[in-house]
Length: 171
Ligand SMILES: Cc1cc2nc3c(=O)[nH]c(=O)nc-3n(C[C@H](O)[C@H](O)[C@H](O)COP(=O)(O)O)c2cc1C
Image (cartoon, rainbow, N blue to C red; front, top):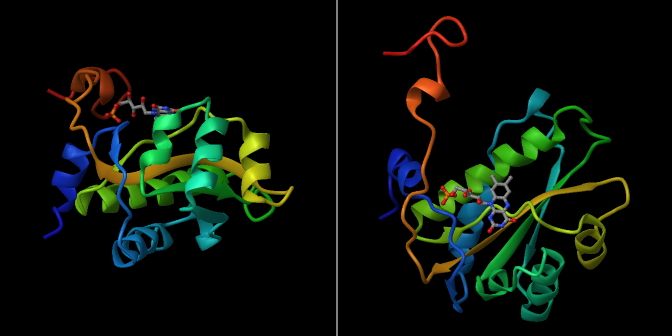
């Protein structure tokens, strides 16, 4: 049974160690569908996602991500590509929303993920054959976790949010 939304949000961690196991096609489809259903500004959907499953290709992509070689053990690496020609202002936000939808769906199905922002854009774009007018926004491995990290610290709620006006306490 998949976890509910709040549990998936609360239990998600950045996982940097994976069991070298494939992801069943059905789960991969569910994860991608979760991204496809994401909202986007004016519903323009300025995005494309490349699922990297080939072991050699995963290795090369991981190397292009500041040599974060641990990524290659995950079943797949998903690269989020933005299309500035479709929405120049909002494409990074739209790609991020779709990516987080996929990350939460993957968490709900028991997989580990990790946002990857440290990458050489030119190298990743060349490896994945990304068209010249598109931008690589972020990547995530999706795999069977071999680690269950503790929660990382967060700001106190008083710093995170205010009521009615910036700086006014919630409590
Ligand atoms: C935009 C973005 C880029 C990130 N890039 C990397 C990265 O390149 N490598 C990495 O190991 N973690 C990366 N992270 C993961 C963060 O380090 C992690 O989310 C943060 O420390 C909080 O931990 P948690 O995700 O387990 O809650 C990134 C996160 C975000 C949101």
